[in-house]
Image (cartoon, rainbow, N blue to C red; front, side, top):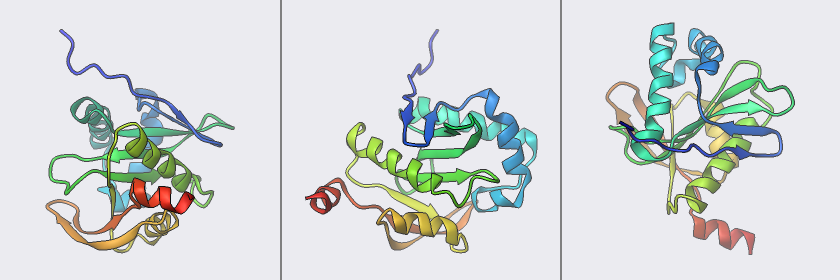
Length: 180
């Protein structure tokens, strides 16, 4: 029996490869969730819970037909983070989410991968709007959203993650107008 078989597309940007999450990502994921760097996205957490998080990331693709990719640095093949479209039960709507692992921040990778994700959401999936949910103290993520042209629209309180800011991304129509 096949359950929800789905082909996860590979997206390449100038410096990154966005590919399907896999078991080989566990060491990098463990390192991320071992650190305070993960505090804005439900961490730190044990290796057991990080393993379950990887299962959630993979299962999201099966349940929604889209999800988050593992971000791989082209130059080194290193696992740099997770970026993509996230919309689990309890979320207000689909969001572009990004988590960069230690040592990969400050290079523009989150913005580069998130822009590719937005292009996939609008171009391939036909979405008309998308948000990002950002913890109020996460100034680096707010900076990424701002660089992408997103505007803070309000707030949302999640049952486990608490208060988050809702950042609305430019629509496909707004992007076309800007390009003209």
